[in-house]
Image (cartoon, rainbow, N blue to C red; front, top):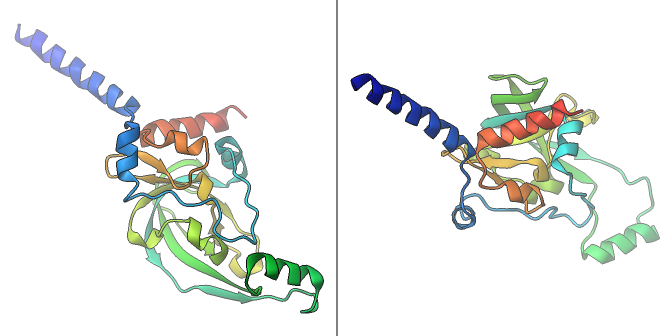
Length: 214
């Protein structure tokens, strides 16, 4: 009888582990978490026409899909560029009138040292560190990485001379990871937002399966 009890306990434990991986937060629970893990607009800068990327396409174009945490915020990289056009150019004037502000050719990249906590796909491995460069054009649509949270993101190494060797990412392919191992999309883009409330394990498996189908 004792052995039967032990077997039942083990069976119950295995079942609980399996069920917890597939468990999903209710819409109400997700909504309550949004005060801590807010959704951002797709793009806060009217100069950029950002297209929402399906998760499958994002997996395909990135060099790695990783779970990360910020180790440090480093010094910004400031780049001064030229338009190559005269200041009275009608196209520039029209754009300035549209956005209600003068165009600035100065670009700032905010740089973070990120540590890989888990590698799902690609060239980066667990415990690797890399530099993530975020242009100020996307500053308003990405989380505060220096706050110490964990994120699931796709990253691609930049070929732009000012930040060559750094990696870049996009917000509509990014998810917060809660201490309870649930994911919440950073943007309201569908179907990414529909995945909010899923477990990290479930989304990790789904990302890996997308690459396997290629």
